[in-house]
Length: 549
Ligand SMILES: O=P(O)(O)OC[C@H]1O[C@H](O)[C@H](O)[C@@H](O)[C@@H]1O
Image (spheres, rainbow, N blue to C red):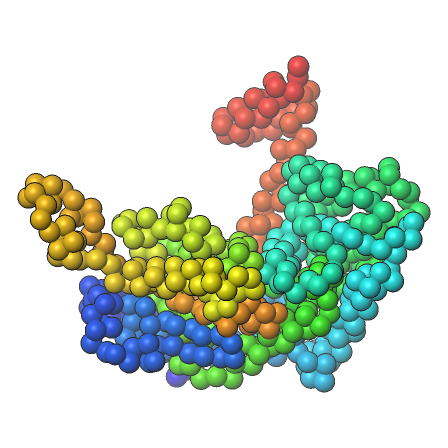
């Protein structure tokens, strides 16, 4: 089928067919689909290495998938995949290639982009952070007074914080004597102050992680950390305690960091896709280069699967299509992510940035206004805790909330207690799917007085039909974590490609940066306040009044 040149995917026949199909099937209960087909799990699940994707608890049939796969063809998904993989400048608004997949290519691979084998560049920087990490972890790298590093503070925000923080926490069981890691992202001085209060400058290493090296939050924290260090030690010792990860060589030098202490990457790595680059230095320091290599290998295994598996057995493609089914055709506004693993508790935050910054767009890649809903609101919390917080709404609220359950089959700690975690996850997906009918609720209340029964039965009824995917990892290892994160990256890519938008810019965030710049000087008593709405003006003067006394 010929690809659509301009983004009128919603004018395609298959788009209309999907709407029609949704209208015709929307009242089908998943529990009936399971009853009618004992093979449903086998037909709607996939395995890849240590990862099982069960997507059978969705409001889908073979026909639904057939139509969704047709949609992927009409949107020229395979063309967009090939363009990304080859390094074409598909991030059109910033005129950049999108090559985070190149960061996990093995050393002997070759990827020529605009006349240069970028795999060699990638492995050169990787070798540098491996060498640095080994020296720090083994104690060869010493602070100004000869002591080894015990604590590392990563100063970064957004993609320069969330991915590394998540990976460090998820892989904590692999740390084996590495330094303690701390992540400071917020410009709220409390974040840095509380972290530094526990640290000894002589045994602390700071990583300033900023792709652009212009992000105000990170630079303010970096300057404050530098002041804290210089006051307690000396300017001359900075070289032993500050390193930077950035694409901006000049700004790093301007900050006073030696070229030997700068680890680079490239403009074709988006911030939210950068944990695989030298931005992952903090992860490598925490768990060691061998584990980091395994993380990369896991992501590469997912890349190979994504680029090569037929779409009907392709995990990221299926997750993306099912997401589009609810988002676009059911009008579901949100998507919840529940990791049943304490180490993965920051996964929802990472996916939130990955997905919402990538696909939170109302304009297509050609600049045209999109006439349909795009990226959903991503939210979530670690499993079990979330059951005691917001699952009530999932079970009995009025909203359709598609969910992902991420469940390791094996934990790193007490096995029998871990089993309770797994049982909870499975039980929730079952209950959300099955629900409890009015008749079932009545049967449970048998023997009760009629009026009480009429009042109670509806309240003890659960509509069910709440869809979920379960991602069952054998265990959270560097390899399976790499696979999991790459799976979500590609899911987001597929959705963006089908909706026809550029998943790789973030003008809304850039706009936010400019806004604070205007108001900051106006907060100072005596300074002119420009024209704002009465609310903003009122808030500014409220602040000033409090600071005048
Ligand atoms: O790494 P930096 O250049 O400091 O950017 C940090 C973050 O800044 C903004 O929030 C961008 O939208 C993110 O994508 C980016 O990860």
